[in-house]
Length: 205
Image (cartoon, rainbow, N blue to C red; front, top):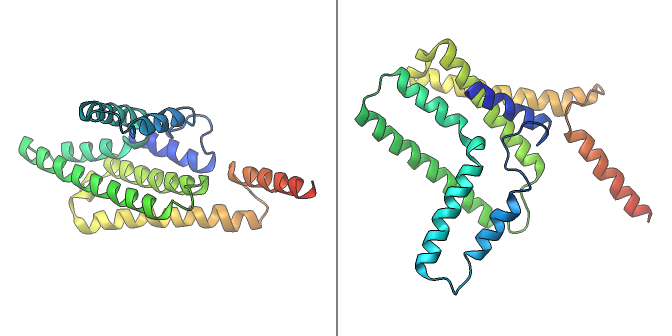
């Protein structure tokens, strides 16, 4: 499952939101944003606000489940391979959720302070897909071939380092070396050409 998630994320780096994708579709975003705006109504009672918040959070989590389920699958598989007991499983689950929430708060803070004057562009989404997909593929491969490598902190760090090196190699090949050779893979370059040609047409007008 994690291998499939990783491959789809890598596909999204090259062909963003084309074909099978684990990205929230643009058609669902207006509804999510509208429900968020509805919760800002000052006339809402506390009960309505609380219930609306719970429903919005549950609905959003359901919509984005396919985008974020890869890593929990890998993590659960790691616990199973270690024969973790119930108490250990619960404690590690709480730790996982804590780290996940802290990360979400950092992302939220970055959005509040930096995205007021700019928005997340497609290129940032592509980069996130590349990093996430490469890491999923690396971890899934380790769990399939030799899960004991995840028993040691040193070897685990090496595995993450290999995934990071693979990301940098893909970026170097895809955005520097291959374009210089006249080879352009994926939809990113074609979308840039369309934007460039449309801006030139507007300039000519």
